[in-house]
Length: 258
Image (cartoon, rainbow, N blue to C red):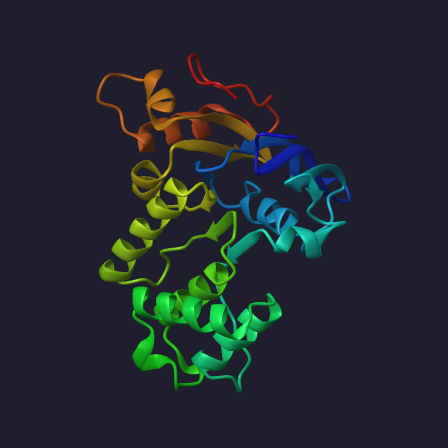
């Protein structure tokens, strides 16, 4: 049995002659927070769509606990919580109804449903908004409601796409604390962001994509290690992205493992 929650092996997505993701290899262990970074068009969103089973790969595979993310999506999503960058909800459901619907879809019984919803509503400060239609929520409130939905069933892999986009500083602090607690409890976290300071603060290991390929991967310390003392993750990111052409092999800078 694999020691990884998520295994991405040779994952490739082609649209005609254009490659959106090429031969990607990444693994995420229980309790690990792995950041996915890259400029626009690098392949982050396509990778997430394949990992969540929304998009079929052209070749290679993404697996969660050995289940193929596309071919066995129902089994995979029992283990996965997904927070999209732009959550959307049915026009005629209130916040409380969205949570009830998601909990029922995950098969939670009445007692478990009430306990899980109550705890997440309190933690994410959703109480005052539950009677409003979710379509009228602000972007930050939609993000908080979607995060609650992602966590309701106790996932073992949490996929976060730009999770702080729209959140106020108080909600950000809550999110950071939640991620740390989940990782401590063994939940694997796949964290995609454009915000390098966030990645450096939150993630234990970071994968940098460029031109559809893996350009570098390692801990923040390893990524900074090839640069001058005092360099930041931002410095390392720009060094990797600037020095790699889209056609270059995905090799890491000296001292940075891929």
